[in-house]
Every structure is written in C-alpha cells, then in structure tokens.
Amino acid sequence: MSTFSLSLQQKDNPFFNGQSSHLFSTEIAKTVLGFHQQIDAYEPTPLVSLDQLANKLGIGKILVKDESYRFNLNAFKVLGGSYAIAQCVCQKLGISLDEFTFDSLKGQEPITFATATDGNHGRGVAWAAHQLGQKAVVYMPKGAAKERVDNILKLGAECIVTDLNYDDAVRLACKNADDNGWLMVQDTAWEGYTKIPTWIMQGYMTMASEACDQLEAMGIKQPTHAILQAGVGALAGGAMGYLANRYSAESFRGIVAEPDKADCIYQSGCSPQGTAVNVPGDLDTIMAGLACGEPNPLGWEILRNCSRHFLSVEDKVAALGMRILASPLPGDKQVISGESGAIGIGLLYAIAQHPDAKRIMESLKLNKDSVVLLFNTEGDTDPVNYLDVVWEGKYAV
Image (cartoon, rainbow, N blue to C red; front, side):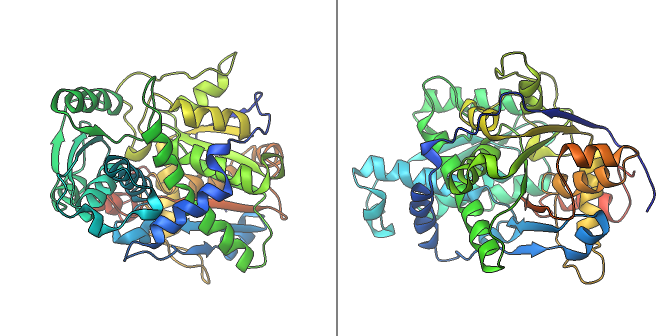
C-alpha cells in the first residue's frame, strides 16, 4: 500500500468526563424502537463486517451499520423525523405514544410541518408527514442536488431551494413557520426550542440500539471505538448518548469526524472553555449532510462529555471512503455510501496510510484488538456526484 497524506486535524477532548444523559437511556431507546417497529416497512438495517479491510489496516474488526436500507429512503434521517412528528401528533390529540394508531388521525385537521435540510432530513420529514396524513414544507440551502429535491417533491411536500447556507435556511424556515402557524421540526436546538430536537435525536437511537444488538448476536460484547460523523451533532449526540448509557463512555473511544469546511464540533472542542463555536461562511463541502456551522447545544453537551477525540478532515477523505466501500476487497461486502456516510471508512484508511500512521493509530488506541463501529448514514442520495467520485475519480488522493 502506498503512503499518502490527507489533511487530518485531531483534537483529543480535554473536557471528557463520561457523564451520560438520561434523555438517551436504554429504556427510552426501547420505546423509540417499539414505535419504529410499528411502521410497515420496518426491518433492522444490516451491520456489515469488513474483515478483509480490517486485516489490511491492522484493526481487529470494522463494522458498518448500513443505513442506506432504512425504509427504502437511502438514509437514516427518517428515524428522527418520524418519531418527532408522531410525538407532535400525539401531543395535539392528547394521547400517549402507546395509544397512537393511524386510525386516530382520521377526521383530524392536518398539521403542516416545516424544516430545513440538505436533503436527507427533509426527505424523512416529508415521508413521515405523508405516512401520517400531514403536510410538509421543506427549505434547502443553495446548491441542493436535483435528485434530493425531486425525492422530497415525490412525497407530496413543498420544497423551496434558497440561496442561503444551511444555518440561514434553518432561520428562514423557522421565521416562515412562525408567520404561517406551521410546526418546526428541526434537528438542531436553540433557546426555547428543545423538545422536538430531543425527540429527533432520540429517534436516531434506533440505529445505535440495533447495531449493539447485532454486535451481541455476532458474539461481540461491545465496540472499542465508535466513529460518528457530525453536522450539527444531532446524530452523533443521539448515538453517542445511547452508547454511553448502554456501555458507559469510559468503556469505548468515541470519535467525532467532520468536514474541515464545516467543523463546528471540532472547533468547539478546541475552544478554551468547551463552549459551542459557530463556523461561518458557505460551508462548501461535498459532505452536504454535514455542511452545518452551528452546533446543536443538546448534541454538543453529550459530545463534549462523552467523546474522546474530534477530527476535522478534507473532502478527499470522504471520497476515498466512498470508493473503498464501492469496491471492497475480495470477501468483503459492497456498501453503497454517499459523501456524508463514507467519512469514517475514509478516515480509517487515510490514517493507516499516513506517513505518521503509527503515532496517530496509537493516539486513537487503534490496533489488532480494536472493534470499530461506524455508521453509513446515506447511500447514493446524489447519484450524479456519486458516479463522479466512484467512477471518474473526482477528489482523488
């Protein structure tokens, strides 16, 4: 294997204290999973063991939770949106989630849900609203891929592509929701707006709880490492929060990976007091699902307490991961992964091939005994760019 150097900035977390949050307990995760299991299309997504790649990189096990299969929507985001929307509907009807049925919605005036998205979250909200007979209005940042827009429109939602970055699109969606009496369903939080983002983050626990159960079915007690990609930190916070409660944060190394053009979690980890830091600008990264400059304060609190390392990487790392997963070593299964889904695998390979690989591997405690859990959060949600990267070598090493 050749040696090459891609941009990898690492910050070991000085604020780690292992303190978990009761909002992401295993008991709440069971309730969330029970809700998702009521949906007709529900089935656990695969946990793929890449044994040949692990052997090549000198790592014990590499396991990828493949969310490209989730509800035939090619991404994990629907887990959060569906759970939050169901909770909102229950609140309107004055019933508990245990009492909720689709029949209970008959004859009710539909709610209009608003959100901002790069594509996956909005598609999940649109799908959940459609399933529950509700309405959705979705705002997207500039540069949104046509395929992602079309997928939202096909679900009957209204979709508006703005000339704003993601964080400003969130503000626009929130203003218009207030003006029109819509209900905002966003996976980030701010003062006075925490309940729905918490439900969304709790919805993401299904992905982590399934993965842990699948590990146990393989005879693996728990992961030694979990690599979680971050945009605002809702997915990373929800999954890390669950893992910290199921195992304890001290028992594994939580690693957060981000694009270097939108690394608000990494920058927050570098701040003197561990306070949330916003990253301004266009957030121009191929990892559209991670192109967020303002941390979710709920997610940041968990990541500050329970993560061991923060890494900020260039776009070529994600593109590398896409190609590795698309063209696996003999004996390993192919995984179709989009830009935001492939950052973890790309990171592992980039570390192993780095001129300073020995030091980096040791600092992350990666070795032949490691069991690394990763999440492929999306498939080829932008099929044009997917082929540009995988077939035509765009963003080559």
